[in-house]
Structure formats: structure tokens, C-alpha cells
Length: 128
Image (cartoon, rainbow, N blue to C red; front, side, top):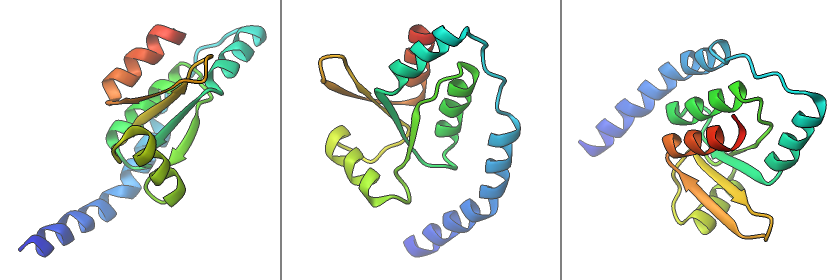
């Protein structure tokens, strides 16, 4: 029974994946316009961040849309298909759950932020 349920959801995911990717691409909001200097400062701050994500995760898509809306060039790391990123997420954050934003502070201290709502709120407070 367990195998049957697992196969059902795997098949459902395979059927829905192209539609989710298309929606993610078409629904991407237009980014905010900043001056060149301001955008360079934002890019510098974003270089200290990385988003661990699954390409078709609806919560990850939600965070990527907010990143697009705020014009944030945060590095994306595929924790689903890249074993190195998956292991880094497990070792650093303690669990393989996406989305997860890795934030390296000015002092070198690393913070792992889970939950799409928390990540979006953080990005809005910091960059909006």
C-alpha cells in the first residue's frame, strides 16, 4: 500500500511538473528598478546569501517570485538533484527542507532560515 501511494504521488509530480515550471516562468513579476549604485549594493549584500530549493516546490517558486519582484540576485542551489547542496543543507541547517535561505553575516556567522513566509518577510524588510 505504501509503495502504491508513493508511486501515485511520484506520477502526479511528473504530470504536474511541466505546468508548475511554466507557471513559475510566466508569472514571474517585473523587478523593481533601482539606480545602478543601489543595485550594485543590493547585489553585494545578496552575494552573502544562497537559496536552497527544489525547482518545482510551490513554496520555493513563491520565494523565487519575491526575489524577482525585489530584483535580488541570490544564488540558487538545487538541493533536490545536487547531492553536494543537499548535504550542505543537511549539515548546516539540520534538515533537508526547502526553501531554505542561507545568510552569511558580516562577522562570518551563518544563519539558516526555513519557511517561505519567514524568508519573504526577511527579504521585504531588508530590501523593499
